[in-house]
Amino acid sequence: MQVIYQRCCGIDIHKKMLVACLLICTAQGVQKEIQTFSTMLQDLYRLRDWLKAKQCQAVAMESTGVYWKPIWNVLEGELELLLCNAQHIKAVPGRKTDVKDAEWIADLLQHGLLRASFVPPCPQRELRDLTRYRSSLAADRARLVNRIQKTLEDTNIKLTSVASDITGHSGRAILKAMLAGEQNPQKLAELARGRMKEKREQLAQALQGTLGEHHRFLLESQWRQLDFFDHQIRELDQEIAHRLGVPSGSEDPDPADPSGDLPAKEEGRETPVPSASCESEAPLSVQLEAPKPLSSAEAIRILDEVTGINVRIGEIIVAELGLQMDRFPDEAHLSSGAGLCPAANISANKRLSTKTGKGNRWLRQALIEAANAAARSKGTFLGAYYQRLRKRMGHKKAIVAHRILVIIYHLLKEQQPYRELGPDHVDEKATEVAKRRALRTLEYLGYDVTLQSTEVA
Image (cartoon, rainbow, N blue to C red):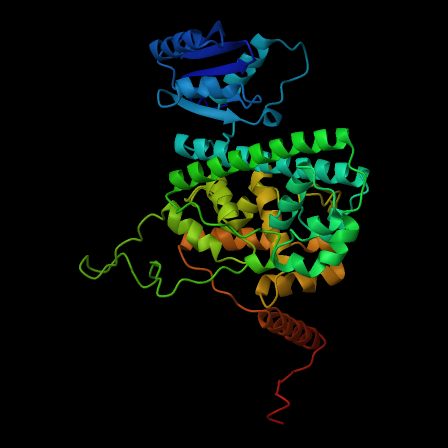
């Protein structure tokens, strides 16, 4: 096979140590140099100096958990790095050792048989850490709310049967009064605010329970933890907004609330759109300027207009995808990377499985959350599209996460604002498809068909 790199290195990474195999092509053949280093910072500097002294051209390593990150941080910017999926590096049968693994990686790299995974630049990696940690805290907070509800059910207090969110203004006021020692259901029901005032009688009945001392101890501990989670999430929101250059401090609508799915459009906003009439043969005086790179704040503003996407989900999308869609050849590659398309598992022209492949779970989770909100929206294209698919596919298959991802791809690539097509667009498109299908069938049967509208007739 053709040799791509004359000097390259394969690294087998572990938690406490790594094995590096350097291959050097000479007139006498291929020479191997094996070195073992610890993963301490001083030894990683020694690894970098050794590779630079040997004039190594490229370094390949497996994406082993998070243990590849310290090596990547030290070698980034100094050498050409390839981070490879461990499933794509299959060693031949035989004895397996760390040295043989490093040699196998170096051999594959030398002949250009490795496909590198995309590693975003450092600012995007830092933003990913923040958004992913915020998503983890939000999941922990949701589990904690479920624990509070479980404790309340154990005390015969049916607050969750009347209030959909016990952490809202009314729920917080009632629970704080209960923990302070108030036991009169009527007085507790009077603390309801907003639309909960209409349910005071139901609240008075639901708040009759047996709150014991151990229940009060558990609720106080859980409530302090809930306040801590809220404080941590607010701090992360501010830091993420600061890094993206978007205003912070505004209340973001809940993505599960259909009323928050349709943000107001901003008046008088124009987005630069590349012109299709700009030819390379035209004089420089008449050529249009290339569109400016999209900023993070502008990208989030564009994404915020899509049904089901709010600012928080827009921040996750920007952190996971970045702003440059050029690294995705088309929308199909992006869908595959997000794990929102069926995996290719076909043998003898028979599809063996229709399960979606593995992908970016953080991006997929955010898109599914946005898709569920869009499915409940009224008077929108995505809402009507979901209702049409749900009749024959069911909820899980009809969810419009893939459609939202395709919209995101074109919005960020073409730098255009989102245009709401309306619910009638689904029926109009289905009518056109049915008409073309009927025409093809009749033409196949040998008929020459001429269509005429019933209104004209």
